[in-house]
Length: 329
Ligand SMILES: Nc1ncnc2c1ncn2[C@@H]1O[C@H](COP(=O)(O)OP(=O)(O)OP(=O)(O)O)[C@@H](O)[C@H]1O
Ligand SMILES: [Mg+2]
Image 1: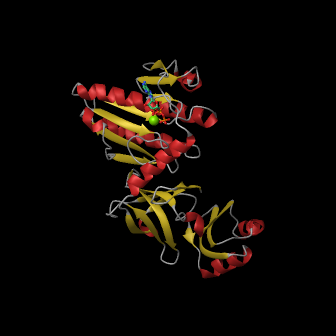
Image 2: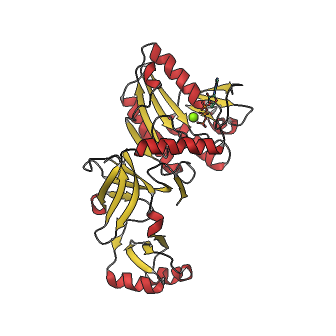
């Protein structure tokens, strides 16, 4: 497992090591756990690929399998990051490769970085953690594990030739990768009743009828187009603005702990994961339209076969099919 700050040379190191193994006739399973600057798959997802030949490292390989993180940053999606790294690792083990290489994201400072790296290392229990650092910026991430039996921390200084790219260049790289991924994508309609949904509430409760929808429209001074009630939560989609001051009234009326209201426009261009029965990601999609009467979500995606899709994971990042990033949810 390779850890280091942005631009420290993580991907370069992985390429070097993978090339070295492939040239010796060995098979390398590469887990790309960097949703911001991915090497293998699109941004906002972790990917796994198997390399048998060094020449395969020069061209873009399709991932064997992906895990949707939901955002280009793991912050706010730490559970998705930890569970997906573990699931991709299990898949990698089943390929029986000679080396499993895990490239991680460049988040090395702050509480989220500490939590994420702690649990990633804990889950995988790698044989080696390669810590690439200028001074001691990743020590605090590896120190909780230094007494773990069987784990070796290899400290590598950042190469004097390593270059940190600007935020603008990193964004442009992501946009290019999104654009490549969605090139040739088409509309696909997903009936929400046919999939399990992981997200802020859509599909989690019982759909409310028109009397409740009318009542909520009055209370929230808005046009409510969809409402669902579960034991502790009311989930509402509105067309346009609503009165935030009246959320409490709606909460009281339905005796719930939580009310989540989203505007229909906020769903537009939202990244989603189209996942299989094991909740592994087959394709990414971009939401374009919710038919709130028929409960059909129209997405733009390279996916052509809807039959293996059993889970829909709503992300928190918006992007259009041309790759332009439209910000957080
Ligand atoms: N050992 C090295 N020798 C020469 N150039 C290097 C070396 N390590 C990194 N670089 C150069 O520095 C830049 C950043 O390296 P790289 O992309 O591998 O870093 P990273 O840690 O993966 O960054 P990111 O956080 O953007 O994913 C690249 O242009 C790469 O070619
Ligand atoms: Mg990298």
